[in-house]
Length: 471
Image (cartoon, rainbow, N blue to C red; front, side):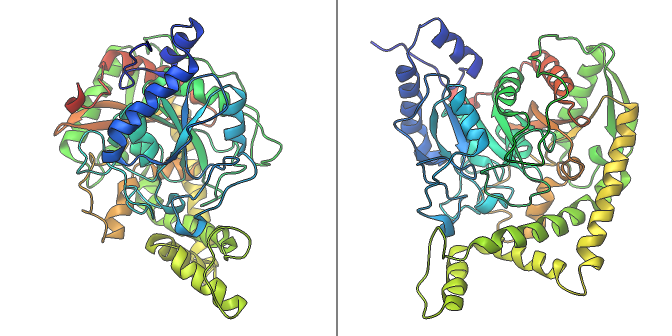
């Protein structure tokens, strides 16, 4: 008789220990997750497809459907890639496979990772495990919701402007957007190449650190990657003695931050002081004022270039037409959803003759100012802290017809992404019965400091990651 496995509470580290002690077999562990998927994913729609057979005898994992997986359909949540089965693994997929992790399946995502709610998926929205009438965040809502719902012990997501951190905040788990260049993007469906990063989502900071240690490091197939300056350390210390935490005024008092979110973050910063940290105010005025418009020029411009490759000729879906031009036009019209079309048009305009310097070029100059502003703040402090999301999970459909309101969901995550800095979101309380996320931002390659601080706060907070309706 197979042992009973509570996938809602089982961490990846605990699962690895069970396997090592041979208290459970790899097949039994996978079966426990597939039973949970069968029980709960009909309501939540975290997965686009599952893989009943997979290599590896280690802890199972879910991958966001922008990560190429050999022999497994990869659609990036878009109709234009329906039926596309890669003949190779992305580097991160190859690395988790080499570590013995077995693939449970591919998780739902906003189309081409463009969105903040997973409602832009061509295959229907995912739902928040805490309240299925609400969004799980985006674009990696499928990965975050799967971990919270016990449908995977951990997962990989992608983050361009907050697509790991924000869903983790809304779903009540831990998510890391790594330093730009610390994790390979080879084999990842591109959105905005100067911003995209792959990172882990899990129930605990230690799980996130362990998964990061598996995927991080230089890759000769991605020239933007670099070796880590020091090995990844799994956090153990519960003290924050000597740590300096900066609290950017603009990121903590921005318009639209809900009172319940602000209160939960404030209480957590008070707890950090009790654990020995030195907490002080700092300022990032340009980052907050210009971050959102800067991002929504750079990211769509790069998206318009990256998405030009989807023509219906080489791979993916193809519409019928009497000429090459008609095939391309109809394929792109039928294959892309509203949000990719919106960003392609915006980005193409920003890159067009006569407007490049005024828009894209100017945005890159502003980005340099944002980088410098973060660098100056992190010379005074070891980490910066603020809410991950201005709000808790909002109702499905509430912002679907208001792109600007949807874009504002990433107001607090975008500045550090533009600066290429690592960010960790940990759950720090509830507001109206829904999770609140605390965002910790570190200097380049400052992941170990993020893990130390996140773990200490996590232990002191004692947040229960299991949604109340399943306890």
